[in-house]
Every structure is written in structure tokens, then in C-alpha cells.
Length: 447
Image (tube, rainbow, N blue to C red; front, side):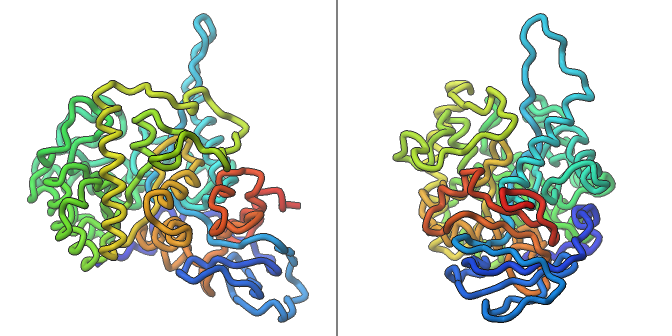
């Protein structure tokens, strides 16, 4: 059973102040994230940053409320990315140009986070970034430097001494033995982490790491989970090879990241469903490493309809091509077919599924949602995985994830119906309005 999160979660403490003025959203369709089809004839009243009523359209709004006509549009919960790496791929100056200053790089992170909110993504879970960039960005948002999504972060990923730490400097906290693992957990919480992430297996993006055998022992993983849960925090595990994945599931890890070989072990999927554990399939990382970043499904040559519209800042690195080593490109293509089989098997087994993009740019989470549809989910299921399912996985479903009375008013309005036309989520111009804690913060509908 998923462990609750503490009320003083750093990400919740850092949330922006709620908008005090009432807001009446009316006239459109409502996809509430609970699993029901979009409804019409419904109005939503927001007051003091929270949803206080879901009423019939015929009811009159309070005199003090700002009325927003959503005719022809769809209201849905703010999207949640359950597996993001909050960083920016910085531009590379031409030879002879001045090198980037250290103080310049955080501005690119802020630009990506602003664009993430503009795309309707109101919450992201950072599962590994470099140094203290995420903590600094979150603090800057807390004190009003810029608007971005709510950010949950793991701090540094807890790992055995392994090659991955060489490839991603400043992202890992290497620890060996139960007591060193326990200390590593406490260190991340001291830094302000919202959950603990662990590498139970090697990473498919590192040539020197093999997904088998498990990188940590059963005892080490059990101590990590026990210590995090004792202190009130959830856990996430990088899981590729089945040995490490099995240890993570048995230890009670709350969310299994990647897990692409799980279709080979139906018993583990059944255990996940019984234990209320979540799978975050992260299809986009396999597409990216394989050099197929412009494909939606296995049979697609390109995005065709709904090509992601560009942000104000689009580095050359985002125009992905096969740039990884041949070994890793071959592995990514193999893993993509394995992830397809696992997503379908997990759906059949009743495992909770949460959407996590795990690629760049961080604001292109809509592409992961569309890929989940191409790999077996219905549009409604994929949207629920990016709203309710993700909120439950992160432990913040009491606050966000659905349009229900009492929830924070983190909302998105799209031009058209994303259930009938999922590609619209990739079109920046069709994200008509973004509401954060009751305040209209982005979109063409902002006046």
C-alpha cells in the first residue's frame, strides 16, 4: 500500500500563494480525471485557490466571481509529469565565442520551467538533476521570481558505487552497505527532498552499466525503504533488469520507474496491483536514445498531426537524431518493444500507471501521453495517468489530480477535446488557459 506523505512536504510548502478572488469556469466540457467521460452542462467554481463547487451550468455564479466562458473548449486537471529530469540542455557557444558563465545556466532552467507551465503541466516530479539547480529554481518560484510548475524532487539519487555517477556528475549519492544507505536517505531529506529515489539496476543510457544483476542487495534496498517510510516519505526506484525490479517490488518501493521487462513476470505485476504500487513506463526515453524522438508510435514515421509547436527557446539539441553509442541505440530499440509489452500487460493486470516523460524538453510531456495511447491505453486512460494516476503515485492526490471539491485549482483549458484529439496537447496554441492555485497564469485566454 502506498505510503502517505508528510503535510510539510517541501514542494507543498513552496507552492505559490493562492488567488483569493473567485473564478467561475462555465460552458465547456469537463474531463475531471476520475475515469468518467467528459461532461457538459457543468460549471466549476474556484475560490481562495481551491475548487469549492462543481455545479450545473444553469446555476448562477457568485456576484464576486470572474466568469470565464469555455464554449467549445475542455477543462481538465493540470497535467502531472511523474518522471522528469529538471535541467536544461544549454547552448554550446561557437568556437571563439565567450563561454557560458556559471550564473547564466540557471536562466535556461527557469525558461524551461516557465514553458512547462505554459504547456499545462502544473506539477513535475524531478527524479534526478544536477547539483542544486532544482532546489534553487523551486526557491526562486516560491518567492516570486518566476512562475513554473510545482516541483517535487528526490535531491540526489541513491546508488551503489557505480559507473552512472561518472556519467552524471552531481546527480547521484553513492552509498554502500545498509548504514551508508540510511545516511544517504537522511541527507536527501536534509536538503529538502520530497521523496527518495534509488538505482536498483544500472541505467540503459550508460555503456558501462548492465541492468543485471541488481546494483544493491535486498538488505540495502529494504533499509532505504524502511528509513524513508519511517520518516514519512515515498520511494521511487530505477528498475530495468528483472532482478533489481523484483527486489524493489518486494521491498515495497512505491513507484517502479521504467520496468520494461515486467511483462515476463506476470506474478510481479499481480503483486504490484495488490500492493497499490505504480508503474511509470517512460516510453519517451527509449524513443529518445534510439534516435526516434519525432515518432509517436512504433509504426509512425513522424508526428504528422500535432507536431509539438516550438517554445520561445528551442536549442539544437532538441532536434534529436541518433547520437548515442550504437550499443545503446540498439538496446533502446529493444527496450521500446519490451516497454510496449509491459504497458499492455500492466494495464491488463490492473496496475496503476502514471505518465512520466523522462526526456527533453521537459515541457513536451504531451508526447508521452500520446505515446501511451499508441502503446495500448485509451485516450481517457492516458489522460488519467497524467492526472489522477500521477497524483496518487506522488502522494499528492488530496491536493491535485482531479476536478473535485476541495482540490487545488490547478487546471488546464484546451481548444477542443483532448480525448477525441490527443494531438492537440502538443500544440502550444491550443492550450487556451492554465490556472494555478486559482490564478490564471498562462495561455491565450489570459486577459
